[in-house]
Length: 66
Image (cartoon, rainbow, N blue to C red):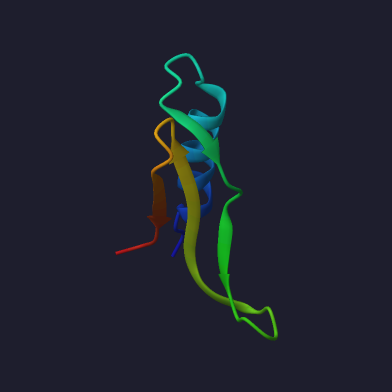
């Protein structure tokens, strides 16, 4: 089965990185994959990223199949 977690996470990152006109989101981290902490192998399709707004509040965005 094909899932689109990579593509969805990339679209979210692009939107908030490229759309600086409203200046509400000032920082977007790279997309982080769900990998084994020691051996680095793929655990799931889950992707996460952190964002920070103009007031300094951080948000954790998670994309994963339900």
